[in-house]
Image 1 (cartoon, rainbow, N blue to C red):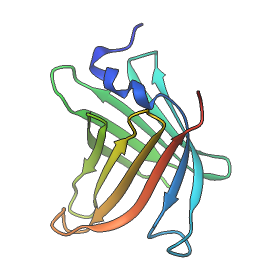
Image 2: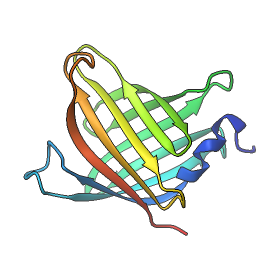
Image 3: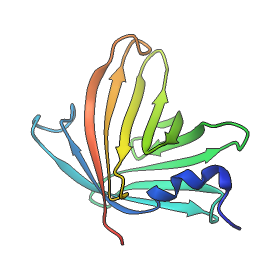
Image 4: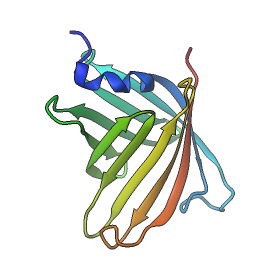
Length: 148
């Protein structure tokens, strides 16, 4: 199978990354930094993209990204080792990556930019407890490519 043309924009994400979390609301101190692994790969090559975060020493999460070729936006299925499962909407164009979900209890959004050379991705997660009326910073994330 060849790469689904509807997913071709995501090629820049394929590979192994170091994940750095900073300015978090959940680490022990505001200046604490945490590192983890991120592997992004094609499923059946090109049918979808899977992102696997973490390893045996850090929390894990799996993101499956796909897209209907008739629509410009992506759908993301998320699950983690805490037992959470979520569905996000996602856009990815012109090096800008956005992910969002809205629920009455907990709304989230992620905004990031991919470096021109594809070596880093810098982003910020925000959260809202009132369906996105007011937002607060959750954490910053930086992905740094570790493969060639």
